[in-house]
Amino acid sequence: MISGCDSPGVPAGPKLDRCAGPCSPPAALPARRQRGPPAAASLAFSSQHGNVAVVTGGLSGIGFSTAKHLAKLDMHVIIAGNKEREGQEAVKKIKEETLNSKVEFLFCDLASMKSIRQFVEEFKKKNYPLHVLINNAGIMMVPQRKTVDGFEEQFGVNYLGHFLLTNLLLDILKKTGSPSHNARVVTVSSATHYVGELNMEDLQSRHCYSPCGAYAQSKLALVLFSYRLQQLLASEGSPVTANVVDPGVVDTMLYKNVFWLTRLVKNLTYSLLFKILSHFDSHNDSMRQVLLTRENWCFRNPSNQRPWKAVWNEFTDSSIL
Image 1 (spheres, helix red, strand yellow):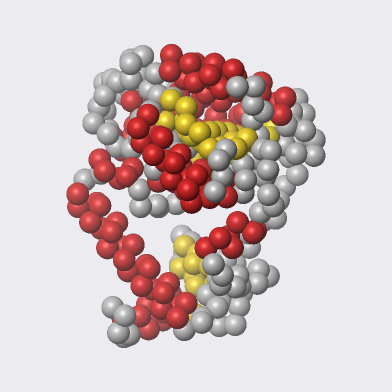
Image 2 (spheres, one colour):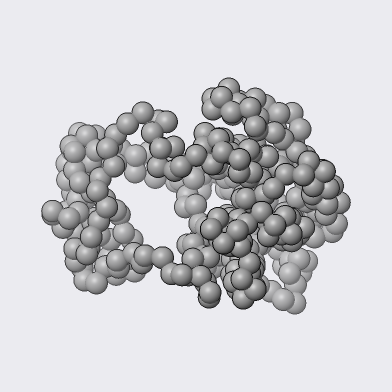
């Protein structure tokens, strides 16, 4: 899910066409993107030369890929992480792959309020502007632990750490943004926020701890924070937008604490999905979207609408499985 553009005071963006019937055709679909070299993805965005971005958790996974892509766009990227050696290795790798020398690492442990404040002090000493803050770092389904400040770890790292960091950097974001070029805060949440509940009587899960429940609560808190922040920014006409995103299921080290059977199912699902997509691509099928609705699954194809069961039968009869 994405918030920001649909918030009060901000012009609404284009809406996705929903499935009106069992497999009703969409009003319009974008042209199929032509194949090209890996670097071609960067051509979809204009150069971001002179812009500065801070990415938390940029040592690996989604954060690393985000930092690298921004570096490809010629942005000045600051990776915020809690492991100095791995951070320097990430910086070196991104510099080598993008030929962008404006990539650096600053230590920031989101489990420590003191460390977050020290990070902001170091950042402000550099007198950089700040065009994009990406709150990406997080932990998932860890055993019950506390941060150095005594907060439940998932709530402390995923939510409270980013809450403090965003508020401490908000003045720089406001000074950097302009009516023609808004600065923005992008916070990575998760679809698990749909099952999350804020237990206002026990936010730190002291009386009853569930790794999954605590994770979902932290992601719900991020969504609510982002919506409220956007409302406040829009009401004061600030040149900053707040956005919250669900990246989907991505194979990263975030799953290291998940039960082994769950990881096995995830890996098997990935393998099957990639085979399916490769099969479609190899046959030059114009499948554009896979929509999962509460009523049914639809393979959206402008020239040929087929229910998912018919497509599934095609795969199970093929040799790719």
